[in-house]
Amino acid sequence: MLLRRWADGAAEIGVQAAEGETRLSHLYQSDPCRVLFPRTPAVAPKECVVITTSGGVVGGDRLRFDVEAGAGTRAVFTTQAAEKIYRSAGALSEIDVAVRIGVDARAEWMPQETILFDNARLRRETRVELAESASLVAGEIVVFGRRAHGEVFRNGFLHDGWRVHHDGQLVWADALRLDGDVGHLFENAYAFGHAAAVGMMLVAGPSAAETVKPALEGLGDGCAATVIDDLAIVRFVNPDAGELRRQFTACWMRIRQERLGFPGRPPRVWEV
Image (tube, rainbow, N blue to C red; front, top):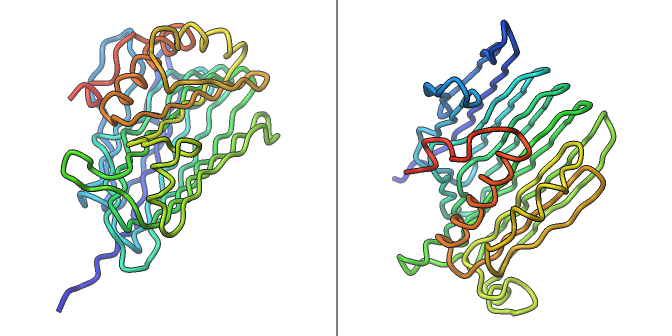
């Protein structure tokens, strides 16, 4: 008899500024989530790397990530590897993300790709709370199956929602929702246009738009940005998931240098 696997894990990470450094102030982790803190050069932000030890997410699994960068901190929150969302017999997988950035803090929430297997079912909600003069670069990449293995996401469910609050006020809300037989949408030029993956990058903070336009130059087709006051949303779509990751990373490196003053190379886990 096959046993149904079910996980209910969480990772909570808080950092605060102390004696001119960004230091860990809060940590809670429960299976299958773990957090590592790689050593970084003095000029680099503090790295907090979330690991999901189960090797992937199946129907019925629930994961919760809660990250907070206190006032004046410099930090990047990321994941060790791409998250695989396996096929489900009907149960919904849920991922809840809360990101809080304090006054004058500079931070990144940049998990690696989410890979949807055919018949995967995922609901993910990301809530961002920004204090006055906080700066954040956040994003995600969703890959529709492992094309190199002949696997394509054609049936399933995805609800991927974002809500961004600044000083307690909702300033942006967005959601991507796919349900049922969705294979035809990827073949439609007015929908996904044969996309193997899509990406979204959020740039928040004073005059955020000024760094986005030059960051997009020379990246090629499939990249565009929308600006709403001190918020810029950059979107990526590409029939090649590997090429999209390269575009996404190149844009991110330019923005993190100009916007946050971080080194122009990704965290080590992104370089693998």
